[in-house]
Image (cartoon, rainbow, N blue to C red):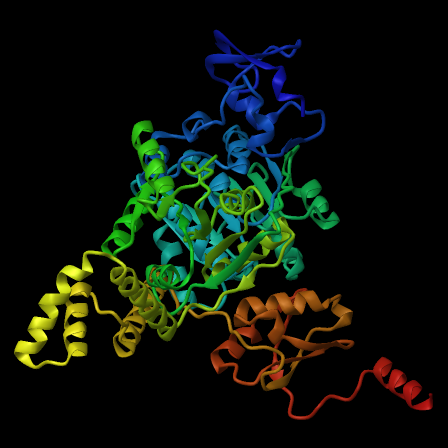
Amino acid sequence: MQAASMWHAETASDTCHACPQVHSLWRRVSALGGICRNSRWAKGYTRRRHVHPGYHHMQPTGTPPSPAFADLGLTAPLLKALADVGYESPSPIQAATIPVLLSGADILGQAQTGTGKTAAFALPILAKLDLAQKEPQALVLVPTRELAIQVAEAFQKYAAHLRGFHVMPIYGGQSYTPQLNALKRGTHVIVGTPGRVMDHLERGTLSLKGVRFVVLDEADEMLQMGFVDAIESILSQAPAERQVALFCATMAPQIRRIAQRHLRSPQEITIKSKTTTATDIRQRYWVVSGMHKLDALTRILEVETFDAMLVFVRTKQSTVELAEKLQARGFAAAALNGDLQQSQRERTLAQLKAGQIDILVATDVAARGLDVERIGHVVNFDVPYDTESYVHRIGRTGRAGRSGEAILFIAPRERNMLHAIERATRQPIEIMTLPTIDDVNAKRVAKFKERIAAALTSEAASTYRAVIEEFAHETGVDIVDVAAALAQLAQGKTPLLLNAKRVAAQEEKARASERAHANERSHAGGGETRQRGRGSRFDPQEIYRLEVGSVHGVQPGNIVGAIANEARLDGSQINRIDIRGDHSFVRLPEDIPPEVLSRLQRVRVKGQLLSISRVERRPPPHKAARRAERAHKER
């Protein structure tokens, strides 16, 4: 990419030669002529491909600021939806991709998980949909059921002001009935896993004739799971004039081959991340489960020793809501977001530095450049959109040689983001055990004793001594009982100690709420919500026979991908894959439900039905295994 310092602004209005719009131009110091800010950002005018290393590499002194969503050519309803959820500025992948997709070009994008790719392709698709047309116009292929639900929810959120918009996630492991009903009613966007999309295409229940946009999200993951044949087949059935966007974290040769066959002169966009974190920042994560995040944060605030804490959330609205809830629980908290006037921002930061505020709840944009020596803890209450944001967040602590603590709240379905952060920071993040009720109570008692000790050193305490002695003498009440009564008065309505039964009831209520939300989401998308199993290869397992083997060209990855996707199993639960001539054997958990086995019967790998069946006896060793065993014995 040419140096950004070669750009300067001129107040001319003309037709941009990079996009069909008339507006103020950014003229380059060369013979290329005038191009608009959007096209300059999106294309970069490199000879071979556009490499977008991030905002900080694009902004030398005197250059235009990072673009806002309004600068990218999005429609007013989409901008309103983004404002509603509090998104303040596009991530690098969004700023680079959205204008290109709006122009109609194909894209081959390389970026790590969690860089904001979903909005990068969802927003341009929504901007170009014909809502009067009820047949599918966009198809998004993703590797897993969880990601299908997540992407569909994102589409729905961004389309909040598009009346009549419909999106449908389709994936294995759920009933066909709600999917078929939704397809009959009409839907604009399909988000699905390759296996289930292929099933619908073979049944004739899904037609791609109206599809104008195809997105392959996390294409490298789909190939690793053995979906290459399904992807090839789906792309071959899509209209020739469709627009394709392919995103991956690693540019494997197989990705290149698919791009060469199915993409038309794609623009390559690479988001490079060379971020690392200071080694003196201790990083921990807590998997969100069993209680509300607010309750978990409250326990951490009560037990962790810190001077000041910075808590990150995703939206401006969340900063205010969380700060108010923390204040209601007795913490000195304040919100910091882009809506604050400069004077109010300065006043809030002054209070933080002076110790009048201990907890600052902020968005990424609002906290940029924040350097307050008191901040010893950073809590990622909401997972950041990308790894660079995470690095910038936790960089607010551990500065100038000081040590710091970083805590990440992560949902089970966001584990991919956790792994991406570990790769980006080149450091492992240790799991965090949430403080127990006993831990919280012990800390509360210790703090209460400290308050008593501090009060005893105060001269004001002597004023009350004579009153207490007189009261004890008059009533005959033990002086310790009098002290306990005074402590209760000082504590107020807030109990000193947590009640284990009450907390257990609250956590059970939270779990019930989570289950109800999951069921509601599953009902909206159809079928039963079922979490991926958490077993391992050490759990009891059985041997299963699959009617697909080496003569069909099957590889272990094909089998793992097919079974994991349909049976909702972790890779650690799929073991001892033994590929023979026309069949294979695999070890799976012994408690697989009959309905799951029934679905696996109909799954195809390399064009062959799995026809899975339990094996009563251990299969005879493969010839190669027998030869190795004989050779070992002969030695």
